[in-house]
Length: 207
Image (cartoon, rainbow, N blue to C red):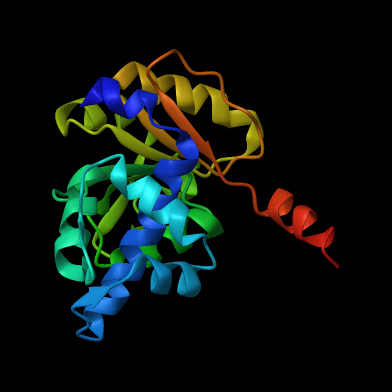
């Protein structure tokens, strides 16, 4: 399965959570089945593309009926690895980090922030929800002891690479990076960059 994941285009993988969130919304309205045409209309995507994406992972549709919503949602959860809880550490508990922590706390999601870390002495010991901010000196041991493979970085650009290096050394394999800098990671470690400024600048083009 791991080798197959590497052969699947990133753009397909990034669409799967969109499909899953849509299906979960349908489930909240007690919708039993949905066609690719309806999905395409609601998601502003080509129905043929949706069928092609899903067919990579199996034959989920029922001819003349479409997709069984709950069944497809379960399948996508398993494909994405969201059928079990995924613990995450967040490094950098400033305004953005604290906001992400609050948001995650109220989401019904398999991805759960379980550890908060910061290098600023004034922030050590602060409590966000049920989590206390820990010093950076405890980061590596915490990650290793809790077998954590995913992390969020919300530190200033100057500190991002050193934080990334520490996470990778501790065994983290996936990083969501909010710092405005490109991170250097070894093969086998995945980084997803999220830069609000860049997204807004791109949106400006359409004005």
